[in-house]
Image (cartoon, rainbow over all chains, first blue to last red; front, side, top):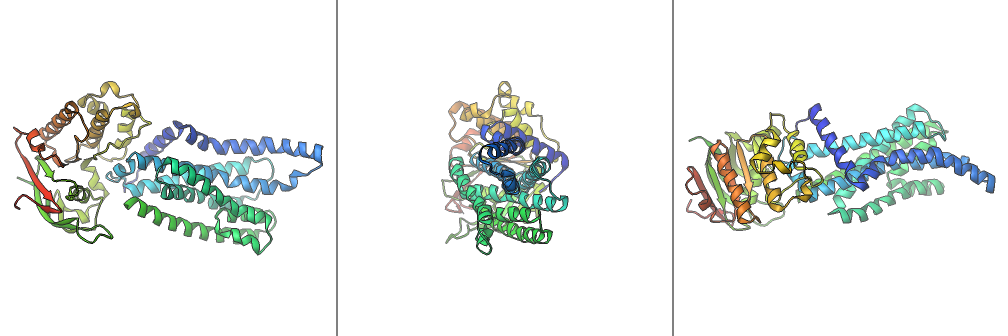
Length: 246
Length: 219
């Protein structure tokens, strides 16, 4: 593979154009901004409403709410990338890319890195502008880095398990089950909550929540999370490579 | 004449297969000629072309392209070859011009002016039309000019006229002859045994017949 900066800009411009021309991909691309608007504007309104009508204090659950929204930008960008891969395989684009100087492996790598970077930016914006709670910068950056690693996970699951875009829609629903991890973490007590540990988002939300009170636990979750995420990515890349060569 | 492709005792077996798909074939392609690689479906033509374009690498025997053993080649090898696949592989959401502009960014060497290429295949009026609105013949012509973007020394074409009506097939054949006149070596893979007739009157046209992974033409 042969990477140069102007080449990368060209590829990124092409991806952006491709994303914006499809209504579903366009929605996924702008989803992080919608999420920020919902968290920032809608949640406080609901909080006031619940307080006035039912004397329920939703503010006590703000950490839970923010931690849940935190895992969505990666999911959106990862799913969008998975659909782009499926479409490019349908149209034979990946086959053509494999006989150009950039090679199929180089192209995949570029895509996984740029979309993870987009997730990083989207999640960073969410943490900075959520308006519900503030967070320490150092653990926040590590948690954002960790959750960005979920973009390749969603993308490769979709591209490996589905053969076309229709199957992709079904697989995307299944990948939504990864959100079970955080839910188990929220509602079960230790040690039962660790059943959720096989789902990557579990480590993100648990790490985020621990970071509000206990930095030592937070870092333990983050380190374990990195190991789990990287193992899953390696396994999925192996699966995808097999699918590509078949 | 300089042999731009030299293949000696090439063998290849797919993972899990019980026998070789390519069973020890040898041939040479002279620079600037149209080389017809003929044979029925399942003869091993596409596998051989995939080996020559480095898409398959676990072969035995030797394959030298431009005097470079392919196993030692790097990704920059692709700066010098053009490939036209049997099925057009293009972004349907993009226009013809956007497709060519995008693919030309994948090369480091100077590339052809996309509008010049589109004019050459008679698609200049359709430059700003999305490929999703193209007919099969138009897509094949666009596929052909995409393979020329990097001014390749060798052009690999897999069934370039398959599924085309006689008029569009003729256009592609004329484009191939035109490329040959400009000095490009054409490696043409096809099951169409009469393809050589299409290039009657042209100098430097040779063919190799393949059947069940072996040469079937007495060599």
